[in-house]
Length: 341
Image (cartoon, rainbow, N blue to C red):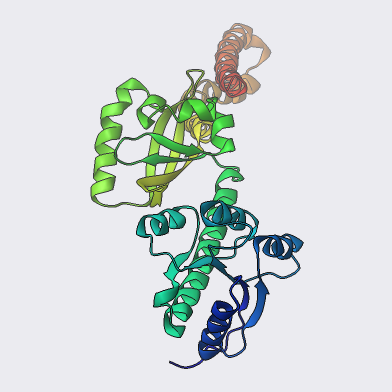
């Protein structure tokens, strides 16, 4: 195996000079230029780690120090190691304790009698890569959390099997009126009008069978105050805290749909007004226009006919006035409906 050219800053906590020299030799066999620092007891190790000026990539820990040993030693080092992987090197072949030490946060547990340069290097490399993977995962989870909780759009996560809410962002909590604690005791059925639940369950089953992501359509949701809203649902599958789940964006489009309905009603009114103008208005207007030239041609001797024609014009003008009032009333009613929304 080629010598690793990566730079490793390593703290060896070991009181036995012979064991320290052996570990040091093993490190130089596999790593080109390791930076090694030694602590002969817990007190010195504590001072070095608390000081914090040296950020260690790996800590190699002997469990039998003059001033602290065993489980208490592991707990103390884990607490102050600032996330550096801790590899235990011990002369005691206690399998049960080895397993327990891993549960305490130790990265690896190696018996000194079985230690070789290769096994030590593999443990260091594995522990280092594992730390990097954990850091990347934590960063990824942090970014998810920020994107989720800081989003201005209502978002929630639910478990596919139970439909339980697993998480909800601040925008969802604020818009729907439930507290986060209430939501975590609820299922998706609880935010649906009761009559919509069968359709919702059928649609969810179909989406899951098809593994359908992205836009899922428009559905009705129920807010805590009883208000029913129309929402555009977009969702994606994910694994959340070990559970098969979906993260969902619920965009409230109730006002948008109401506006579209109002526009459609207005268009219907305009079509009705257009028909009135083209048919009903034309009749009295045509009579008036036809009577005007006839009146102009009348002489003084035709006073009775003139009066009769003027009466016809007056009736037609009143009819036209009533039609115009009706058109105006239709417009006023439509404007009042808009203002009331």
